[in-house]
Each structure stands twice: as C-alpha cells, then as structure tokens.
Length: 159
Image (cartoon, rainbow, N blue to C red; front, side):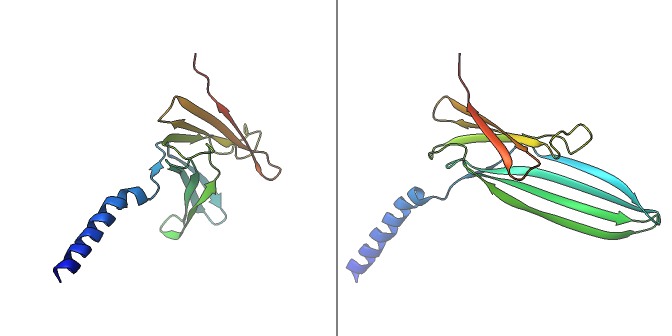
C-alpha cells in the first residue's frame, strides 16, 4: 500500500511539473477598440440608432488573430423603445509571422464608410512585433470591393 501511495505521489508531481509545458496558447486583446454610431429616421417618426464596435484578439504565440465585432440597433418612437437587436462574432485571420514565437500586437481601423471612402468600408492596419528579437511587421488590409480583401505586410528596417 505504501508503494502505491509513493507511485501516485510521484505521478502527481510529474504531472504538475509537465503542466506548464502543455500550457495553452496565450491571447491578447488589442488596445485600440473603437465605436461608431449612426442615426436614421424612418417613416412614422421612428428613430433608429445603430452602433458598431470592433476589437482584435491576438494569439501571442502563433501570431494568428481574430477580428471581433459587435453591433446594436435600437428603434424607438417619441415615447418608448420598440426594438433592440444585437449581432456580433469573431472572424479568424491568417498568421502574421510564419513561425511560433513570442509576439506583441495592435490594430486599428479606418473610420466608418462615408463619401470620402474610395474603397467602401475601408480597411485596417495590423502591427506585430517579435518580442524576442528586433523584428516588427506592419500590415495594411483593405477591402477591394471586388471580393476578397487585399493584404500586404512589410518587415520594418532599423537604421
């Protein structure tokens, strides 16, 4: 019986020591969230306000990331709220660096669509840095209006 207790204790100690090696990937939320709202008038004196916000969730090990968006639409008349709708979700985007490492990340987007938007909804930029080396990559992603987004990344040089 004493041998069984020692064997179980040794197994528990071994699993505890290996747990950090099997640690899940780490994620970081971008620090550049934005919100934009618009208002519209509908027939019958109804007012509709729509707000959208986005952020990015970045895998600091693999450099894969997700673009997350949430929206809320509120319709009301002069006396009461008639309808509230919400929507949202996250879309997986490709890796920025080809190999695993330890990365830092941030992203930002253009303003919401307006008359100055040549490419419709515009685009966003992503910056990622390898924190173990002096390596920074900047990417710009724009909507072509013809299907898939156009994405180009450039490694920064240091002088």
